[in-house]
Structures are given as C-alpha cells and as structure tokens.
Image (cartoon, rainbow, N blue to C red; front, top):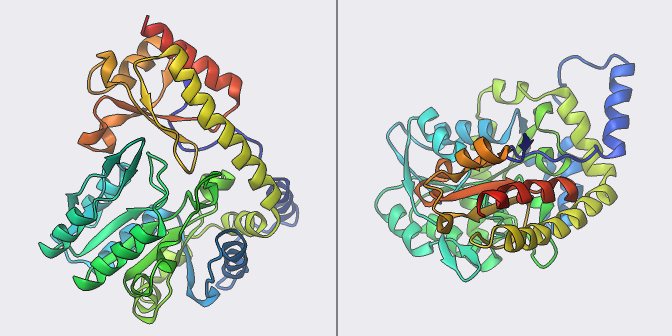
Length: 356
C-alpha cells in the first residue's frame, strides 16, 4: 500500500537538523524546555529573509502544535456558542477545533476562479455582520494550495476590523510557497491586520518535524499580544525541547535544503498534473501555489462521494478522504506529492488502472 494521505514528506532531514538533534542526545540534553530559547530570534530572521516580514521576537510564544494554539486562542477570543468562520474545502481539524472550543463553525466556501480558488470576501463580511466572532484562515490554503494575495488579505483584515472580529491565521505551509507565487503574512497585509490577527506557524511542515511538537503564535499589536501572553502557562510548557532545537537549526541553517525541497515540489506538482492527464483523464486538478498537497476532483469518474475508499481497496493507494474537508470535498481526494517521482508515478498508474 502506498500511503499518500498524511501531510509529511518522504525526504531526508536537513543535515543541520540531524546534527543538532544528534548533538543534543549525545550531551544528554533531553529535559524540560527552558523559558528562554533562540527560537523567536531565529524565526524573526527567517521571516525577514524569506518573506520580507519584520517580526518582533518578543511577540513570539511557543506551544505544542498549531492546532493546539488555534484551540487556545479560540477559547480566549470567543464564548461557548459563538460562531467561527471556516472556508471549505479546508483542513479537517478546522471543523474539529470548533467542537473542542464549543464554538459553531460557519461555512463560507472558497470560490472557484478558473483553475484557482479565492476567499469569498462578501460571504465572510456577511458572516461577520451576522455575529461571527472569529475566522480561521488557512494561509496558504490546505488542501487547494492557494496563496492568498496581499490585496485579498488586506480587505479581509478591514472586514474583521469593521465588525470587531478576530482572524486566526494558520501559516504552517508558508515556507513551501512555490515559484510563481509570493506569500503574504496575514499580519503584514494591512495595518488593520495587526490589530485583529494572530499567526500560528511551525517549522514542522516544511522541514518534516511534526512529531517533535513545536509551534508558535506571532502577534504584531498590543491587544493580540496581551491575549497570547494571558494564555495558560501550560500552553507554552507543552513545547518540546527537541522541537525547539530542530526549529532553530531549520530557521538558522537550512535555507539551501529548503530551496532544494521547493524545487522538487515544483517539479512534482506538474508531474502529478501530467500523470493524471495520462492515466486518469477524467480527473480535474490544478497545481497549487504552495505545499505538497494536490486537491483532485474525481467526480466525473462516478466513484461516489468518497472515491478514496475505492482507491485504497482496489488500487492500494491511500489518499485523504475528500468529504472530511467539508461538503465541497465530495468526489475529491487529497494526494501528497511530497515524495519521489517514482512513487508518485506508481500511485497514479495504479489509480488509472481503475479508470480503464
């Protein structure tokens, strides 16, 4: 069985990360995470180099993972029963985190635009006007790979500001923005964004460190910074020491490795397009602008609302289940192309055999 469903890559770690973790084990540095680390400064330098974004290290606070940070921030800025905007098709935990925080997800689906997707700003404004208190932004978007442009994010910030709402931006895929697109940090999109926004990110997706459990929240204005500072101490204590060590090595010393990964993913997104056209001609797929996740519409093949089930059973290829991303995911699958071209070719060839 070829597992192309979970969001992690098949590539070897960046050498600097391997060296840093090995050295930590060799010196017995396996205890608690200290209250002060170099992670805020390392990320600030990385953000300046890669995104042209000036981050104040004093406004970077770590936690265990991005979705834990989202849950804690939702608890901080909403009350039970409040409505929170999500934009399906979207990462399934965006729905589950509302159950965890006892809030109600209000769905404002992405709009299809040619071969791409965009936020429905009119629908989002209407949802805020009807009382929504916050929005979960996926920037870049999972699963479509959409990189929201600066003008869109600036208008989103103004909408939230007008209605007294909050934007919680998951930016975990940002380092994997692919050639032809430019990532805009939400907090940097407009003056209003700093006032209404929180960014949550990690080195985990780009550098394949999810199991090491280290993420962080970033703010850019006093009010959001006070909210993050007031989160329970346990939110920060849950940060893994190995996660911090690996993230610092990633942000400080691994730009070359990241550039090579982005180049490979750029090739793979178009390889996936070509393989689908050859072997699964009924599939509809537009290469995304970031990440290593392909959002593929298989509705025309008549394989039902959840085609990944048949693909797993008959082709022995595991893809993510489209309906978990919302009703808009019916007939779709999410495929991870963060692997070698030979594995991707074998997977699509197997799927194509079902279409004959």
